[in-house]
Length: 204
Image (tube, rainbow, N blue to C red; front, side, top):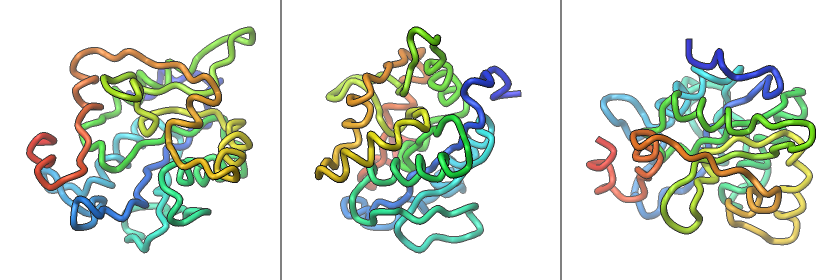
């Protein structure tokens, strides 16, 4: 079964769907938008559930409780970096080792991608990996919202936000995260980001 390869050093691993965006460019709620009959937020949640020990949906907006456990954003309006902070605080309070963060608008990311990225965080005592993210083309050349973060990153992300940092990439760069090179099919899945209605065609 998917997820069995994840070692104990990464567990418990909490999956966190970031669904707090205001979808201004998209024009309607992306999280609720369906692809092949399934809301994007649930596509992400189901993919995480196949690998992670628990899944939460991080949002500053009102979302349907039927989607699952909803975690309120600690800093509404501060973007995905604040969503990562909320997920890491939740993981710390629940004694989890890691958090796998997945944006709701990456609808083609499946459990095999999540597992591959998570395994990239396996290191050694001498070479401890604090974060691992899927590599991609572009700037940055990694996807910080398809990434696993160790719970001890929580103080780092809080410090960044307190200093006014908003970019999602900043935490990964601050902890010198590891970029995980994926096979071509998985890399294509990570590259499909739904920001505009026209992007739904690419997702399909």
